Image (cartoon, rainbow, N blue to C red; front, side, top):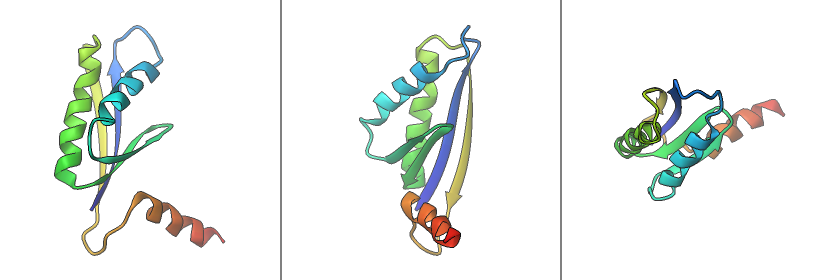
Length: 99
């Protein structure tokens, strides 16, 4: 199971705010079957890597559909195959070590 973090940034929009673009991406995500979590700096996905990459391709297009002429998308992939994990388990593993 993969855990993937993505940040999509529209460029040249005339505004420093991107929250409206993020909201439109997340409206599209509600129609998808991939588990995701919004964070202050991006969106984290959990699941099959091929499915996640297809969803990322769709949301990469959202800023273009909203008038952006350039979009920068950063993707980080954690594809662990020796055991099945989740977003919550990764966070819990670190929190347990803080105690």
